[in-house]
Image (cartoon, rainbow over all chains, first blue to last red; front, side, top):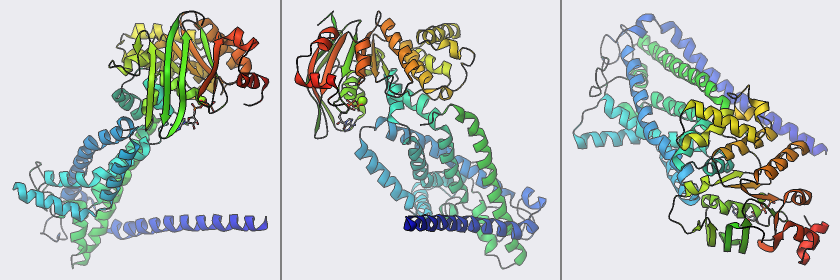
Length: 284
Length: 253
Ligand SMILES: Nc1ncnc2c1ncn2[C@@H]1O[C@H](COP(=O)(O)OP(=O)(O)OP(=O)(O)O)[C@@H](O)[C@H]1O
Ligand SMILES: [Mg+2]
């Protein structure tokens, strides 16, 4: 009896400890970005394109990278959604009785989740050369979408998996087809979770540097079409950090702050939005 | 057999993987009567009910042999649309699963997927079926609320209304009162007694007293076999098989 109690206390403290390590680490990263980035951040930086070459002179801003990153990740997330959502629904509704096949698909998706994004970048680059395309916004979108599709499908899959079979049976017994069950019942039941899956993928898309390194190119201009190259925030941070000039280095933290704030704004607004649609969810 | 059969089950064998779940079932379900499937836990009542609706299609490695004939059609060996076949049957499951939408939309769901779009007609029908399920008085002023906010007993009646709205000929109910308090249970039982004028009803239960109250026809199952079946009066007053006698005495449950 005494031992049980000690055991309880031990594991409780272990959990508290590990939770605090994670939270503290996160706070440390965010506060160092704010601490180093905020002084370098200015309206000029947000509203202007860079002046002064590749390594980002001290003048001008990162507007091209902000807009480029938004274009790129919104486009890539949209492409991934077009493919990812149907696949996730297919796995959980149409293949319901073929558990073995679904598990094999899951296995391969998890494998491709583990492939580093630079490999997707290299693959995209090879494809571009093969088709004779130059580095562009479109090439970047396609490459990034390839990279986030497995992430999105598995995140959605985990959500759809939680729908109890009884709800599916209820839908079928009312005479719905599989597609009706998918789009009228599963989507409603899982709406919040699916939005979270999309967000997760968006976060990966906007934060990744390696897959866009070869595929989107780099430019000081804001892209006007899908065929033009574009700058992105992760690459801007990469270039600024590697600059020998201290002022430019400080700007890397400002860029990182901008990236963090964008992700924060999108997460919060999507959560608020999805909360409105959550009220019909059946809790089991 | 009393009355004309609505469902005829012949030599039905169901196995999942290597496990045989139903063995050589021969049952006739009379039209416009309440047929009760009775038997101890795990004997295959739910499986039999789901086979009638082809919901067993959702399970991995199921193997169905034999035939189930409804309106001259063998639903296990048919080319016609399973979706249409399922519309013939309303299902009440062991615990209620309302759809993730409002009370109104739950009842309107089946109407909408069969093509009814006019708001006026939808409103009339939703009201009609909610009244049928004795739920209207409790929800008429909050039809837009999520169905998940209803109590379990109300949810079960909502599922009944939703099932009736598809205009089925058969009602399949799997221990429909197992999650309900005595008063809600009684309401459902009374509803069934009323509905049997227009519907053929199959109810699974292992509450013997409930079976006595509502059954016209009884099918007693044990470990995947049908042991005995016949008109309720006969089976309850004069069971022929030892297993049935034991069960009625409460020897196992
Ligand atoms: N999907 C499944 N896969 C494997 N075995 C199953 C499956 N569903 C049911 N069974 C088995 O089939 C047998 C009958 O189950 P069923 O649910 O039909 O019993 P039941 O009579 O409805 O019992 P209860 O009164 O407890 O609901 C059980 O032995 C069960 O383990
Ligand atoms: Mg059961």
